[in-house]
Structure formats: C-alpha cells, structure tokens
Length: 101
Image 1: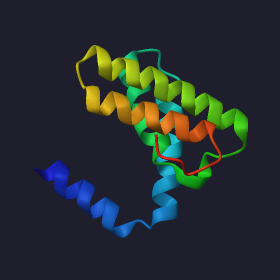
Image 2: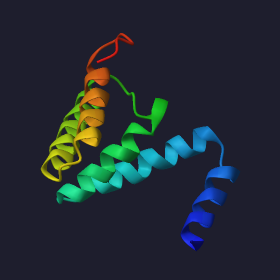
Image 3: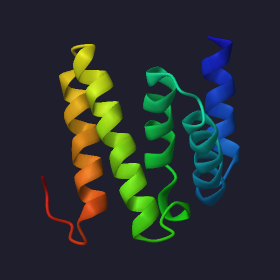
Image 4: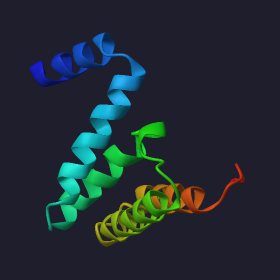
C-alpha cells in the first residue's frame, strides 16, 4: 500500500513533461536488458514518453518493433487485450494519421 501512495504522490507533484522524460529514461534503460519482461516494461514506458521519443522515423520504427515484441510477450501469457493494445500503438507509430486500428 505504501508503494501506491508513493506512486500517487510522485505523479501528483511532477508535471507532465517531466513524467514523459522520466518514462523515456526508464524505457531506454529497460531496453538494454535482454529478457522479455524488461522489453515489455520498456514498451510501456516508451509509449508513455510522448513527444520526447519522436526524434524521427528511426525512433518510431524501433518503438514499433518493441511494441511488437511486447505484444508477443502478452499473447504468450494469454493477455490478449494488452497484446492488441501494443499492436495498435506500434501501428500508430508507423502511420502519420490518427486513423483508428
């Protein structure tokens, strides 16, 4: 329970831009680890990094691939709704439109 209170306090006192930057830093650190669970968590954080990630198409393609890996990780664990969410996030990175998938 103290973890939840700590997380709530953290989210309350830090502004959105700083949260996005921190998600980017955490996501990049997790990507350096080779296990599937870390890559899944990296995708979660990088998807929350917002405008800080988009240094062009190269970053977008890398994140789309990470989302694909996270989707496969979720599918293997029968978390199908999460799997589809990661696929959609990856597809949105590869298109310029706000088209819904």
